[in-house]
Amino acid sequence: MLSPLLVLKDSLKRESGTNVHHANIQASKAVADIIRTTLGPRSMLKMLLDAAGGIVVTNDGNAILRELDIAHPAAKSMIELSRTQDEEVGDGTTSVIVLAGEMLHVAEAFIEKDYHPTVICRAYNKALEDAISVLDKIAMTIDVKHRSTMLGIVKSCIGTKFTSQFGDLIADLAIEATQTIGVDVGQGLRVVDIKKYIKVEKVAGGQLEDSKVLKGVMINKDVVAPGKMKRKIVKPRIILLDCPLEYKKGESQTNAELVREDDWETLLKMEEEYIQNLCLQILKFKPDLVITEKGLSDLACHYLSKAGVTAIRRVRKTDNNRIAKASGAVIVNRPDELQESDVGTGAGLFEVKKIGDEFFAFIVDCKDPKACTILLRGASKDLLNEVERNLQDAMSVSRNIIKNPKLVPGGGATELTVSATLKQKSSSVEGIEKWPYEAAALAFEAIPRTLAQNCGVNVIRTMTALQGKHANGENAWIGIDGNTGAITDMKEQKIWDAYNVKAQTFKTAIEAACMLLRIDDIVSGIKKKQAPGAGQAPKSKVETEADADGEQILPD
Image 1 (cartoon, rainbow, N blue to C red):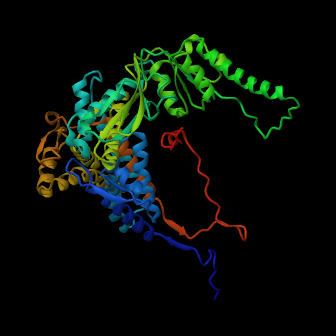
Image 2: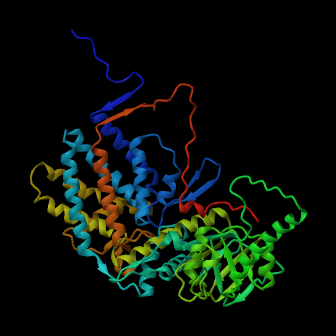
C-alpha cells in the first residue's frame, strides 16, 4: 500500500466540498442577522466602539459593517457588498445584505440535496433578469423639477434613518445641494458630483434647525492679518493661486559667500523686490480677495494689506476647487500668467464670522454656483456624524433621481410583486432549475418580512395577507407601512424607492450569492515568504483626494 502523499504544508488548513458551502452560508447569514434589525423606519440603532475608543451610533448598514472586524472570508465579502452599494447608489446598504443572506439561506436546502452550485447560480441569474424586467414594468417616471415629489422620495428614503424625526429638514438640504451643483452635459443628462463639490461642514453647537445650504463655500480659515485686512467685502473680486507668495528657497542647501557688506543688502533687496513684483502682478487686477494654497510671507501680507486686499493662505486644494466652481474664478499657478478672465466676480459677499471658538470664512450669495457647502449644527459630535451619514444617503438618492427619474414602490411592495411574478413564471421554467428559481422568488419576500418583524406586527398574518393581495402580480403598490405595520397603498403614503437603487440591490445581492455558492475550497494559513531577519514592513498608505478633506491642517 502506498504511503499518503502530502501536497499542502502542515501549517495550512484546507476545507472543501459541502463543508465550505455550509460554512459560507452560515457566515453570510450571521452578517445578515447583525443588521437585519436596522431595516425600515422602526429600526434599531447599533452602538459600536471603534479601535480608537470612539463611539459610533448608527443604523446605516454600511457604517455598521465598516466598523466590524471580521475573520471569516465569506463574511468579509458580504461586507464588501454593502460598501459597493454605498459607493454606487448610496442607499439600500442594509437591504442588499439581508437579500443576499436570504438567497444563500434558500440555496442551502438544494446543496443538501446534492444540487450542483452551477445549476443554482443559473436559476438565480434567470430570476435576476426576470426581476429587473418586472421593475421596468412597474417603474413610473417623474418630473425632477417638481419640488414636492422630490421631497417625498428623499423623505421616504431617509424615513428609515435616525434623522427622520427632524421632518423635512435633511431632505430639503439634500435636494437643494444636489440641484445647485447639477451640471447639464447635453442629451438631457445631468451630472451631480457629490464628493467633489458638496462639502459638509460640521460645527458642534446650536440646533439642528440652524443647518443650511450655503450658496457658496465656507472654509475654516481666518484672514492672514486680522485687524489690517477687511473681514467683510460685498461683491469681491477673487483671485485664486496655487503658488507661494514668498521668496523661493533653494532646493538643496545653498551657501553664498558675501565679500562686501553691501552685497548682503543687495541680496535682501532682491528678495524684497521679487515679492514686491509678485504682489504688483496680482494688484494689477484690483482684486479684493487673494486666496492661495501655499504660504504667504509677512512682506507680501504687508503689500497686500496696504493695497486694501484681504488674503487667506494655506487653503486645501479641494476647498480651492470649490471656491473656483462657486465664484467663477480660475486657479492660477503663476502670478505672471494672470488674466482678467481668471478673476472671479460671481460671489456676492465675503465675510469672516466666528462660530463657537473658531473663525470661518464665508464666500456666499454666488450667482449660479456649481459648488456648495452644507453647514450642519447640532448638539454633539455623535449626533452630527449620524446626521452627516444620513445626509450623504439623502444626497445620493436625489442624485440618482436627477440621473434617472424613475420610481418604484417602497415598503416591500416591489419585492412582493417581483416574488409573485417569478412564482408564476417558475412553472414555465424547464428542467431541474425550476426549484432554485422558485426559491429565489421566495427569497425576495425577506425584505417585507423583515419590515413587518421590525414593526412588531404578527409576521405570518401580515405576510399571508400581502401575498394574497399580490397573488397574480397585481396591486403592485400594496406594501407595508413601516411605522404602523398596516397594509396600505404606497402611492397614497408616498413611500417610494429610486429605480436604480432597487435594481442595484437586486443585482449585487444575487451576483454575490452566486459567487459565494461557487466556492468549494478554502485554503487558509498561507503566509508570504519573508527574507530571514526582515521585520514586518509598515504598509505605505496612498493618499487620495478624498483624504485631503479630513487632514488636520497646521495652524498658521
